[in-house]
Length: 147
Image 1 (cartoon, rainbow, N blue to C red):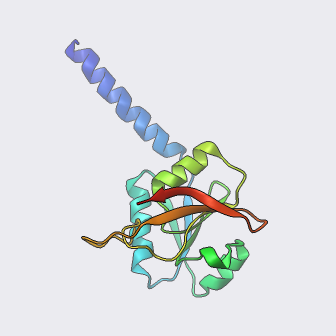
Image 2: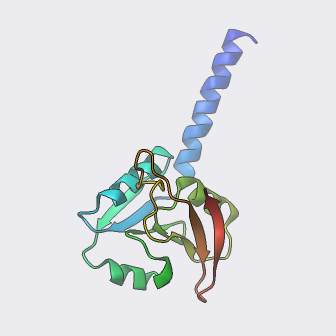
């Protein structure tokens, strides 16, 4: 391949990657101001092309009720992106898949705070966990598993 064509291909790929990141909707994250793992989760999203706005909240239970997060699926932080609710340490890849596929659900959750999930990384420790989709009628199902 000619060097100019190679350079053009590289520049085009970088432009497309940057343009794709600009197409991702902003993630508005509600979190306790003292929670470090929530900030680490936001950094994970930013590293994966999302823009994150953080809103400090003292009453996270009120936020979870407002966004109709089922009690059995709760975690520490609650976010909104593209019309969906994101509860807890959901990987950026699952959020991108949700936005791409647009299923008829209210959102995604990673219940609890499993070690090894984004924002909960601990060297040498990793719990298996599921990303669960949920709907307004109380239904839920496994969206993806991480083992």
